Amino acid sequence: MRYALHLSYFGKNFAGWQKQKNARSIQQEIEKSISTLLKQEIEITGCGRTDTGVHALNYYAHFDTPAGLPDNFLYHANAILSKDISLHSIFKVEDDWHARFSAISRSYQYFISLKENPFLQDMSWTVLYILDSAKMNEAADLLSKFTDFTSFARLHGGQKSNICHIEKAEVTIRNNNLIFEITADRFLRNMVRAIVGTLVDIGRGFTEVNEFSAIIEAKDRSAAGASAPAHGLFLTHVKYDQIIGDGDIINVEDFPYL
Image 1 (cartoon, one colour):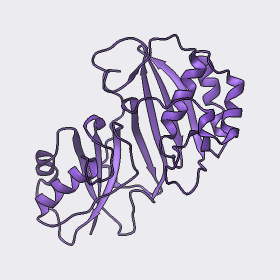
Image 2: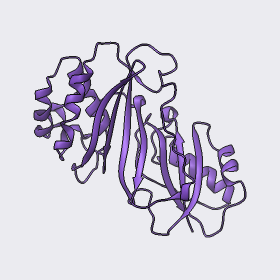
Image 3: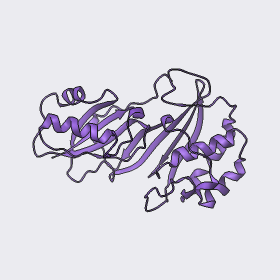
């Protein structure tokens, strides 16, 4: 039987989602919790990799087990887990449902604090320079006109293709926070953070809006700006090609304190 999990995690104390030999990961922590509870070795497959320090409001994973689940499974699994991870719901899915490959789009938000805020220091990038959000939004709107994002890809990142189809990209301001939101069918490693770093250069006047297209067309990582810090980035939504959970999923909809 295949089960899907809906969860959230605070990424500060983890080396990203993927299991690693010498570092603590989200995947490893969840596998350990469920394996302990079910008294069998469980392998978890996630909807994608997030890098060290990146957070997820809504993340999905799946695992297989030949047996049913014990009563109060979520309660007991969460009791074993680190408090930086919360399992929200679990539900049976078809055997061919896949947390990664059944997804048709993903959305990320990046948060920039425009004023010092002690409550947000681990969840947003504090930028105290004046940013022209209108110019940043004008540049962000250009992203959907392109498909090759080599200029924003991590060098030697391991991806087979740098082609992505962006549905939406915009910048908004709310309560002294600048929020960059982007939705696409797939993302390259470091892509969102590289885009944000470049947009901040535009917002500060270091780069002009009319140079943004040339940066993308260069297909050269050195043409773009430096990557924004990991701790401001959240995976916020994953859309699937079929309805899952039969209404049991209640998305974590908004960023804390906003």
